[in-house]
Image 1 (tube, rainbow, N blue to C red):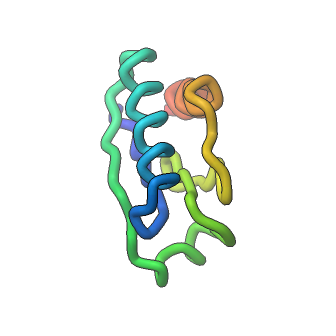
Image 2 (image 1 turned 90 degrees about the vertical axis):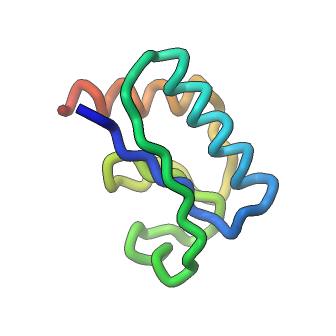
Length: 84
């Protein structure tokens, strides 16, 4: 099953770093994932995001207001993959 990843943010450098780390984690784990960048600020509260950038995996906000490491993203992806 494909894991859904959403990067929440206006498109700033930090948002791009979150996306890069997510892509690196996906590649290193070898999981199937679809990565989407959500720039619509009105959508952020639906995920519970208070500060950008945000990272949502399978509909669950896992990080907000900071840039998670590749290792952190790998852990969240592995948990999401086991839940499927």
